[in-house]
Length: 158
Image (tube, rainbow, N blue to C red):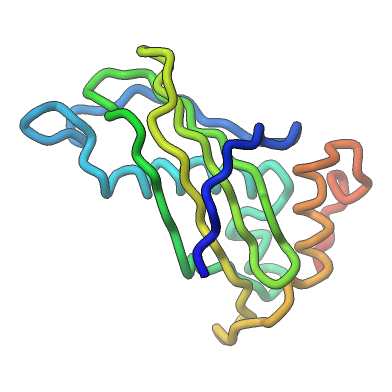
């Protein structure tokens, strides 16, 4: 069952990335091709995970990986070449799978461009799917809700 799109304000520990829409992301009408929105989600999700010590190398060192198993994007208004964009990401659910919600805002035009989500699962070093998110990852993700959490300063994920 797909996650419903939320109008809720992101958690205080949400992470954002900002950029200008590059020319190579637009079509002949200078509108961003819909597939590039997934790339924008990836940029924000990567920054969110990095901010809590869950970058790719951190996960690998702990014997884990994350795979996107589902994504969805509701387009509200188009992004165009040269627009300044902010993509904000925050975790929604992390127990059995990791759901990340996104808000894509067109800062140039002062309006929301899209709302989106991705769902990820944790895998072990052999690529086998885990049916629950490991405790070490849960602790790290909790820092996205509570930056004062002791997990924010912990480096050992084993």
